Amino acid sequence: DQQVKQNSPSLSVQEGRISILNCDYTNSMFDYFLWYKKYPAEGPTFLISISSIKDKNEDGRFTVFLNKSAKHLSLHIVPSQPGDSAVYFCAAKAGGSEKLVFGKGTKLTVNP
Amino acid sequence: DGGITQSPKYLFRKEGQNVTLSCEQNLNHDAMYWYRQDPGQGLRLIYYSQIVNDFQKGDIAEGYSVSREKKESFPLTVTSAQKNPTAFYLCASSMGMRNRSPLHFGNGTRLTVT
Image (cartoon, rainbow over all chains, first blue to last red; front, side, top):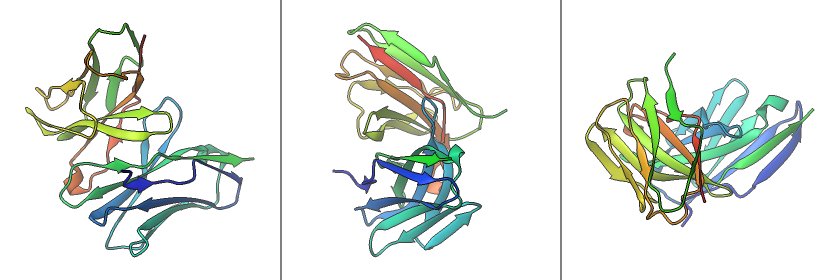
């Protein structure tokens, strides 16, 4: 039973445009959400997070939006750059838990 | 220069052999984790440890064992009982997810069993 779903395996955008990566979750106990970026043969690196008490968090070109009623979050990258090409993982944890649950990832390709 | 070191980067073993993957961190983090990544499967939690001498099973612990004798080290043994051991293994550490401290990952070990 997949609790964190990234339904788009891949996304392709033009340099300078907006990239929107989506993530849905099923566990209503999740209260903290994170996005990670991963290059091939490397470990994931933390990008940005959001608590369930917020609906938006921004860090430079990266903004995460959370819609709790829809159990949906999205990562916006503006403007997209070729160096953003990577696999992006959405992750979530429930309150009091040490376990971070990951989605299957979305491969973003930013074309010059 | 703080970080997480996983060694070796590539590891090859024959079926039926146990193999131990190394993970060392100098971030002074309390919690450490092992994840496995398979193509199209995302990251799945194998084991995690919140403090020294204590660890818990994750979602796919069967066929694996760990130890946490030192704060800095969290080795993972892939035993011959693991049915599909070939995968990319990732070690991570944090100040603890209960503190909402993000996981910091090593660069992984790719294990191939033939």
